Image: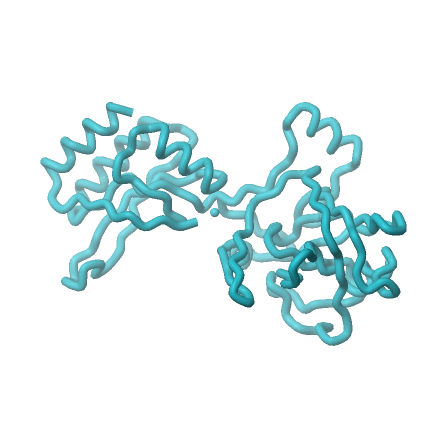
Length: 262
């Protein structure tokens, strides 16, 4: 977008200290539910490493399906804290998944015997190659995992925060491409950085008038260069994924801009 480029050049002449740096980061804040707080949701959607492997939680849509191996966990973990802050209850219908959001409602079908159960994700795991979900003892027993140990399964997203959509609703929304999604909107694009607050205000105002979908905000970072002076960064927020933010940056001629995560 040439308009934005020309405006950036003007700001560079008027406001001192405009800088861009080249680091990138990674995810729309999920609403809190009766199970998981807003802050806990945010923390569980950050990238993390376990046993040397990196995992990047992401949004999902109702009807989304994944296939792999399921296992179960029981007495040794009963009463211990799960990733969303709850205490693990082996008698509840819950499960662990490495990347799907907390409180995602999932139907687990044992492809080896046809049995199924519905669980709510409240933990991260299982951290074993090939395994895609770790069911609670009760959920695992309902599909025969207590005898089999592990089994080939298909898992499908049915809803969020304890609410399950019917098969008919899922099929209809999938057909019309209106599937319910859980949005993780703390991805953004840094469009400017200034030593002077006034420069940041000008850029924020400019981007506010350009886009209705995305919101420009000013972030103050203290003592960035070790000289005691603050730096005011302007972030354009509200992107549903890192890919959306990157596509926006690349298609709008925002040279020097980069992806950020709030």
